[in-house]
Amino acid sequence: MIRLKHLLILFLTGIMVFKLTGQSERVIPDHQLLIDRILIEGNRVTKRNIILRELTFSPGDTIDKIELIPAIERSRENLLNLSLFNFVSLDASHHPGNHIDVIVNVQERWYIWPTPIFEHGERNLSTFLKEPRWNRLNYGLWLKWNNFRGMNELLNLKIRLGYKEQYVLQYEKPNLGVDENHAISLSYSLSRQHRVNYITLENRPIYFRDEENYALSTADAFAAYAYRPGLYSRHRIRLHYVDDWISDTVAVLNPGFFGDGYTRYRHFKIDYVYRFDKRDSRIYPLEGNAYKFKIQRFGLGLIPGYPYGNWEFEAASFLHRKVANRFYMANVTKARLFTNKDLPLIQQKALGYAEYMTGYDAYVIDGSDYFISKLILKYQLMKPSAFTIPFINAKQFSKVHFSIYLNLLGDVGYVNQPGLTDPTNTMVNALQYSTGIGLDFVTYYDKVLGVEYAINRYGVGGFFFHVTTPFFDW
Image 1: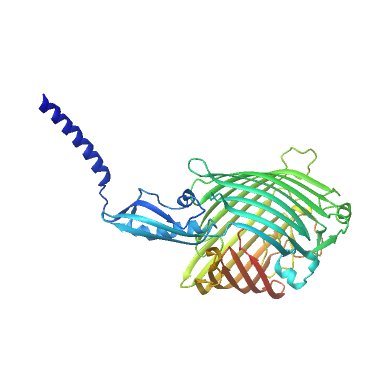
Image 2 (image 1 turned 90 degrees about the vertical axis):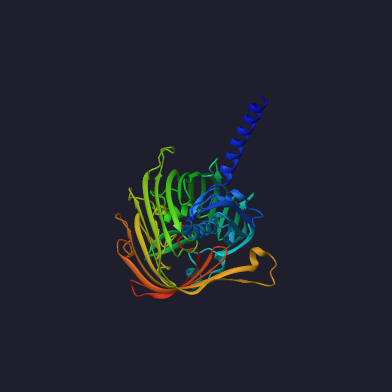
């Protein structure tokens, strides 16, 4: 009886030992690697889950050896595209039995920016440099807290005075839910200005200034929800309430600004946006593709008497390729279509505003529909390199990356406006094109300085300057 009891104990113990050793001694084929751990270094603020969310692999995954380097590079690009880090590196530590640890090293940015505002109020830098009027400057304070609580949240508070007043309060919360693929954002802004582009003549904006009253004021509030099913795709739905009002003088000068001489323009609008983005960089991409589709409804029947119910359809594609050593090619195309063509001026902003054509900085083209396509051939004059500024102690600023690209540019665009337009606006309903050459200076904190010499369809050429992130808002 005692022997039977001892045999039973040994038998059960053997089963448990077999199970435990079977779990720990997983046999990995020679062509694969097992990721045991992911070790993260340098993240003093950023939470671990925010970083793990962007990796293309997880602990316990097996990966073909030939795929390890591409997976590490793709994960590095994903982390940089968060705009939370200045530098990111990944490495693998190999162990017996085809086991590895992945080490992620990040250098975090400075996240709290109580930034003084001192800027020009023109549509672009070239317009200001051509006619620098110092009474068109903005000043104030912008408090932008990126990576709030280390969770990639955004707090945004702006108080801007001067030429264009603006007050903004905004909060964004990504990485909600068990799988961290939901996000919400809330925003309220109020903008006021004494000077307004009230009409377009001879393809140029014409301004009116009211010293006593605000010529144009805009209140905009929105709530948005986003869903990110994978690393590269994103769905977003956003509900806006917009309240615009103008001075009586603007309505007299151009009754079509809001239409029918109205001085107030209130409406709800709702939009849905799908975006797929698998580029190596959102700030200055060289390789990869991105696509965007947007559908928006103006007027939801919630405000009686709103006369401009309308559907807007918008699509954009971003194609980037490496064609040879240091040579890259890009094509960026965007198109917009309104179902209602009888629109007030405030809804007819097409090219020359957020989207501009090379060589057309001095002009605006208003209309209901448009498309624009840019072809760019890049040569990498200076490869991305980093240097340290010795007299700056803060790591977030002392190490700087820098690169320079020479560009050959070719643009084509068309703005459609079938309704009545001023006969002096000859650029509407006509194909526009331009060509040029330029330099891009790319550095950290998402800044690109562009200098171009371009000639447009009419043979008008000149130098143009931009401090922006190309195509970021497209």
